[in-house]
Amino acid sequence: MKKKYNILFFTIGLCIFLYFIFSFGIQNLITNIRTTGFWLIPIIIVWLFIYLFNTSAWLLIVRKYGSKISFLKLFSIHLSSSAINYVTPLINLGGEPYRMLSASEYMDNDVSVSSTLLFNFLHIISHLFFWFLCATMILFMFDKIILKLFSVILLIVLGVIIFIILYGQKNGVFGFLFRIVNKFIFPERIKSFFLKRKDKFDNIDRLVADFYINERKIYIKAFLIELAARFISGFEFYFILTSIGVNITIFQSIYIYAASSLILNILFFIPMETGTREASLYWIAGSLNMVPGIGIYISVVNRIREFFWIFVGLILMRFNNNKLNSGAEMQ
Image (tube, rainbow, N blue to C red; front, top):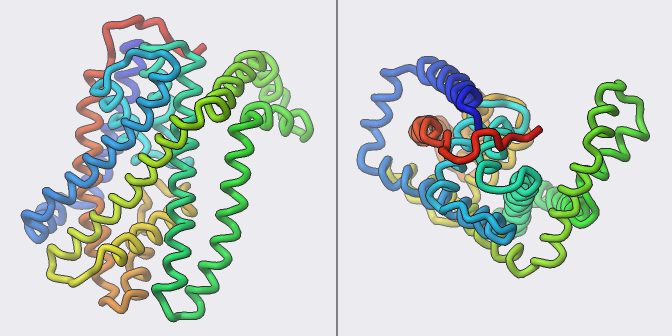
């Protein structure tokens, strides 16, 4: 990636990060760090394991494509792109262009895009399966009729979405988009964009479909790694609540993570989930017969953990401008 793009990503990310830090309040940050105390360390370490699992899944994909990129370099790129995702709206995909550009220094551009697409598919599908399993778990955990009804509806919706995504991987995502653009009324500029790059998009679709169909064992292994990362996420809430003396089971902490992540993904367009996270955790804590205000404390510690990893990701970004082919960019 050219140095100017690296600096641009870093500058934008740093400015937004500082804005959120000052909006949150330095004194508020210090007070809650003191309140959480020692438990902040395992809370942060939980996400270290999650990022390591994410990178392992992505590495399985890029290695099968023939890339020799090291685990540490891929880990660094993943952390930096995740930091950008945290501070941008639009389904938290702001870091994906950075991920593709950085990875393209170590592999062909089409492979960079294909591996990133596959990784994101696996990331999304692992979330969907995780929510599916948790919705099933809720049917047996709670007696409230409204929660049982919601779980049944959710199981149906998730099943349909999972089928659509798996179909898309097999039959071509860009080809599907290309057919939509041609079928409906879109500005000529958009149609021209797809038409000029049709061969490139077809090649990316072929690479994604080929991996999904012919590398099924690796695909399933990467999926299981991503799914395991989702369950590990629940430990964050376990440690947060333990830090203030709340007795909670690991199943309840997984439920909190599943419910909150579902709500936040539905409200994907809000940067840093401003306000929505606090409201969702307030309601979720109440559904477990906890003092609803505990949900606010959970969201505050969540943000402290995020601030830490955003800072780490932005720092690593300054080292991701690699010595390799600086001209290897997406055209």
